[in-house]
Image (cartoon, rainbow, N blue to C red; front, side):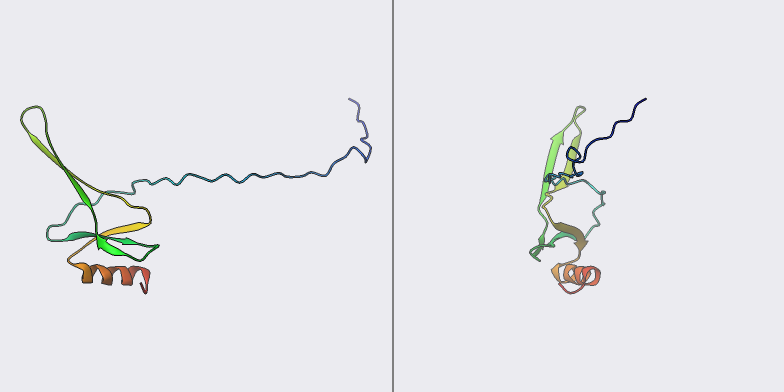
Length: 102
């Protein structure tokens, strides 16, 4: 095996070229929570600071055998935290306790 010397004029500095690529934001389900009777589902937007009752979609379907299947889903919004509380005042207390001064 022969080793050749490369003249200095032909040697180039190692230049690193990077290209920034925007990643698409993806929402993933972290878990499921059972509804507790008597509590309401609220949402808190961490960007705007808005607190409101969460939008719930209710579906009723008839399955084979004559059974009725009921399902509920929460409309997930970006930058929101969801939780159950008795009323809005109680929800504000929970958020303040968890995330500090809101």
